[in-house]
Image (tube, rainbow over all chains, first blue to last red; front, side, top):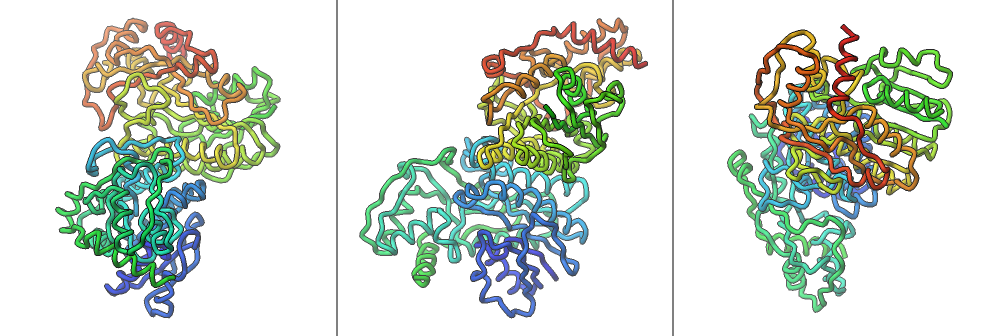
Length: 311
Length: 311
């Protein structure tokens, strides 16, 4: 069994490589290392079933041998990263999706698209079920990611309908854990690094906006089940932790876990920042028998440990 | 003054070529003739300022000399056409937009994107102002057009923000007139051709859904003003006729104008067909001093005459 994975050196991609290898897959791993990091894959160097190539998926994608599974996980994913690379992000999610769908079509491989809760934009329905069409500003600054991922979903579905490609669209909600970048601008690593350094924790807005945070091991379990389950062609699935937490509460938790005596300071909310986002995972529960297991406190503890070791 | 126009052999594109030539422009016209037709440009053959090339804009776009204006009007645009060519439609609106934005960036040319009222999807707000974010199913059958155009808008805005390209995004509502294809599946040509043939007029659903129909001369006037006005970089503009008409009423009007004694028959509504769509053109009125002038009856009369001559 051979899988192609793009974004392999990223946070989620690298954990997925680990899981695929554990399950016995041969892994063709691609990453252009724009936001991914080679050190995330350092422990796999020399693994007999692991083959890494530095490649930008906005360029045509060739694979040396047939694959049974394609996982398209390449894309800047944090607002800081995609706002720094807006056009490149749009190319990865359009050209990269096109190229990797082409591989899946050629080899009749199963195709897993890493989509995002951002396709729901600033939702007016809580929690968000997969049937919800979302609330996205097509010409706002975040549209370079939101609309690009909606485009990728539509393209994957078009390949499913027109060419019979067995696609699974995964709408991944906020996920955290070891191997996140300390500088990607997201709440969990930012708070942890600030607390470890004894700096004030910066909360955007008043901190009453909520997020749902899924620990990476849980997320990877969901992705893997979605990839290997039969009969899911053309299915859209939310994957995330439905437990909501206010951003301010998250900051307080991190501060406690690190044991730092630092203040929490507030900064203005960026444009189009969603007030609230929370997955309805009824469908994933039903189709995959999946739900998150790791509590926020436990997941944060492991993540704090990871960032502590890096210092 | 030299303009590049894609989709030049299409319904809107060919009328725009006429207008640009009238105004003294040199016109580089591209079309792959998938849904456009050479006969729409037959009268321009041999025109000293008109240069047509058959070219698919999903392939890189080269222009022989610098241009000051790029009008990206290539794309299947009727539901029948884009549902027959779903993946090609998505490529035109992503790759084609990318390639033509590249031309505009290279030559510091103004860029006009032909977007569509379909970016509003099945709207929950009437009439639709440009600020409305829309209501689109990202994975439904129509998403191959709706999401592709939203992607194109987001990409144009990214080029505006990142590279300073002077883009104008035009959300074009239903337009009708001479040179529409009789077989594109849209209401006006379908009804006219049916009436001229003495066949029953087919209305989808009960016909109480409304549309707003803009006569092509009015629309071209709006596009041209939007292209030449100064200080509109990064502006989104609705262009269309705000007068709403029920689809059933349209069928009756056509029947009267043709003088056909034929019944009106009903067929089931397709999936995700919008109930209602109507532009709020306050912004175009204010910024361009533009509004439609041709009444529905007058526009239909001219269109009936066009289709009558073709028989």
